[in-house]
Structure formats: structure tokens, C-alpha cells
Length: 75
Image 1 (spheres, rainbow, N blue to C red):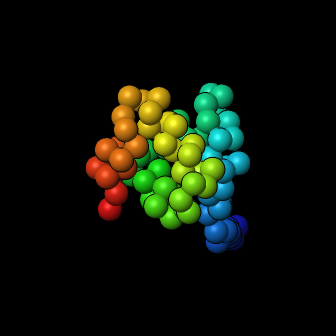
Image 2 (cartoon, rainbow, N blue to C red):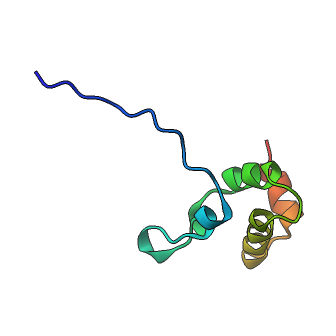
């Protein structure tokens, strides 16, 4: 009988570098993550931070104003 172990590693810290790093398919994480998670990251970061600016830029690229898309998905 083989024993299996699981690692209880904490989730990756959501930094600006992590957010813009390419993942599978060459897309950036900010393009792959859902708006609900991006809204949580947005409200958890300080005003004017690189994370907020990146999320705002992505919202505008999708044709939304940042306040509209983030208020819909904030909870």
C-alpha cells in the first residue's frame, strides 16, 4: 500500500508580476481570471497601485468602465 501525501501550500500571492505573467496559451492571468476574482483583488489593493491600474486597463479593453464592471462583481 502506498501512502500519498498532500502539500498544504498557501495560494500564490497575487502581486502585479503574478497578474501580468503569461500562463498557458500565452495569455496573461488578468485576461484569464474571472471578474469576481479581479474585483476582490482590486478592492484588496491600495488606490493607485499597479494591480488596480492593470485591472482598470483590462476593464477598459473589454469595453467597460472600471466602476461598472467592478461594482457588478464585488461581493
